[in-house]
Image (cartoon, rainbow, N blue to C red):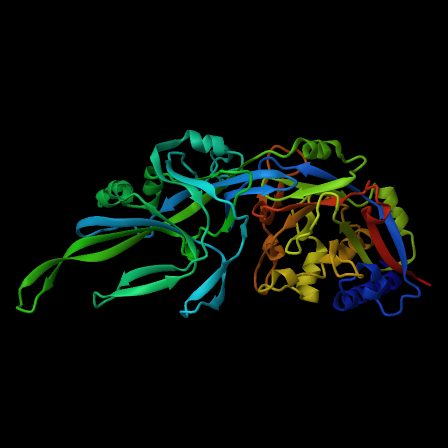
Length: 533
């Protein structure tokens, strides 16, 4: 690269930084978002190819959070999410004392929630987050005899075992014993959980905590499975225990066409687990100096995990499937169908071939900004959800794009506390300037395209998905590299991974593609530049 072109590239970088700082939400004044003097700013629109892909099987045992329930999307139909989870011992060789007797067993999985105003009695009230729908569903729990391995025998036990979203039939074939819990009319509650714990003085303390899925399980089952196994080999370590009690299958089923889907964290750090409340005999000294035998309250908590698998059931409507199947890599598509879970995504191909790239390289341009504007198809989507974001990534290599890294490291608009306002220099909501209504999404590709044209970076395919929280598409290490969080895909020759965050996003949308009948909303690569004089 000669000195003059290097100077131009440096100028481009400075202009891009200014663009990120100065940008606003009005899609009708894009030029004004980049530089103050737009008299020399020009626009080149480049035809792209975009098409949808249906994802039928995706890895779900590497997720940080999970879904449980039933969700009926107005476009993509009904999806049911169930959970197979291991049970783990918090301590090896637990002892339960003399003559232990179980009083109760409770499964607890906290809901994501925010504190609201206090009620008239001064009690804290809560609003549930990440709950989709409000119609009762059926939930049941049964012991699983399916062994969840840590390592893959087909890879000589060198790789972690992958479990997939479409394996529910296999899991259900390996259920054992009777159903230990069943509720035909389940709805999540936003009420605080009140419990009681015995303090050091033997008195009962009242403990209040946030809302949670809280289910009473049969004591006889856990008396036999856990309490009576004290001292046996099955409780001596977690390897033995996980082979003995191989897991619990929490199954959701629809009662009606609609339902309720809940977004959970089942890790022990969240407070999730199975608590065994029991009493045992202890000897105490009475006032006369003698010995009395009394029963003392105790508790023991089993953890969920370390392997947790989400399974999904559901079918797309026939017309949506047909539209996805008719889109292709040669021509593209009129509409792009994005849906989370075991859903669908879009593939974006920016440049047709090396000849097109070389022709762009020959132009004497100072690139100010490059973007893709995705407009929601209002014939399918009546109301756009502003809480969702588009995420674009390197599909061929499963990597982050340079523009996201630039936003996080250079612009520094990553906001861990407010995901809706995070990384907006890379991905943001487009709004109509006349009424401030959301109309679509904007993805900034300035760094990515500049790297292709200036540094001969590979013209990779790009993957487009809809996510609830853009902060969760990568692992952010303080003062360190950021690592994409991806999950494996099977059944597709040309897609190996997708962002894990999309799997736990139960919502979807429809966008105008590169063949849209609405020319103003047709997907194109927009390059804003000034001529080098």
